[in-house]
Amino acid sequence: MADRISTSLAQQLGINAILLQQTKVHQTQQQISSGKRILTAADDPSGAVQILDFNQSISRITHFQTNINYAENRLSLSDGTLQSVTNSLQRVRELAVQGFNDTNTAEDRQFLAQEMFQRLDEMIALANTKDANGDYLYAGFKGQTQAVTGSSETGVFSFQGDQGQRLIQIGENRTVSDNNSGAEIFFNLQDKNGNTEDMFSTIYNLATDLASNRPAAEEMVVTMGVLPADGETVVINGVTYEFDNDAITTAGHTAISIGVDTDTTMANLNAAINTEQSLGNTDVTSTLNGSALTLLADNQGAGTLSFSDGTGGDVSITTPASIPLYDHLDQLDTALNRILDVRSQIGARLNVVDNQNEINQDILLNIEQTKSQVEDLDMAEAISQLNLQIVSLQAAQQSFVNIQNLSLFNLL
Image 1 (spheres, rainbow, N blue to C red):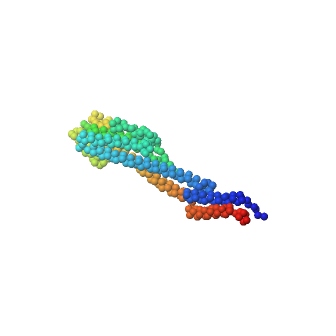
Image 2 (tube, rainbow, N blue to C red):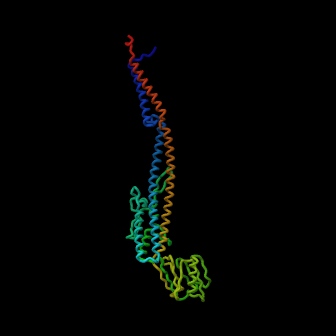
Image 3 (cartoon, rainbow, N blue to C red):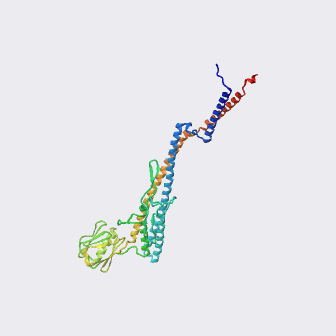
């Protein structure tokens, strides 16, 4: 016996069929408009979890890329700043060499010194360069503290930051430092005697010496009333001269022996010392004026000239008390080498950043492609499915209308 279907049930079944087809059409339309296969977790629970993981990975790598841009900007800014510092240092060195020329007058050297002072203030400004966020580039962790204080007027310079180096994560297991401390770059420079000096003080002292018309080389004069006795020594620039009765010998750059015997004259001694200078064994030259023998030490430092006690009152010594100008040149070269070393470090970091940027882009592309395979919609298939669903909806609507028109009264 067949089941009886009431009119109301037939209507409800028809409406349900229409609503079902409308829901399918609506969902497919949303998928096509968004281009996504999965609109809610209910569409594909497993795929939705995968997409969540993909999005987290993409977010993390995008953050690394942001860090890379930040680090690259700071490193590039630092490299450009240090290039400007190098240009200023080289100009100061050119001025110093020009100033050492004996043809310069006192006024000439004062003009050169004035430009040096201007270059000094320029370098202090460069040392206090700020990045795009307003942080001092060379202040270490103290980004809001001015890195270097001082000026050409005061002649006193100090570092106010710290020696911290910020490490920025640019990859899953990769970090890079985005700066060098100003203490490392501009301060903590050692002279040939092992003393620490900053490059600002070097330039200030050099400019001050030029302005005061100091000569590039100053004489240390040793006047001998009699010939030195056997075994007596003189030390100039760390080179020891010993007078003995043997033939003239050279024991490297730390000990020079000058032969003295009963037939030796001041002229012989003068010639022997100059012979050692011509052979490159020493920077000391000798001149003879009557009975006075004068030793001239190039590049000498304060307190480096001495005689043994055996000479007694026969020897008088005149020595400068300040650092010679040539030593300032050595310090400028030390500063230039330090800048070059730091720029080499920055260049290496920029290479690391560029390489990691390419790695991150490759990883990001791979993740996005995999995510697309899970999430994105096959448009051709979706459009075909939409057309089929529209046909089904139209059929449901038409059948509902036809059923609505069925009635026994129509047969009477």
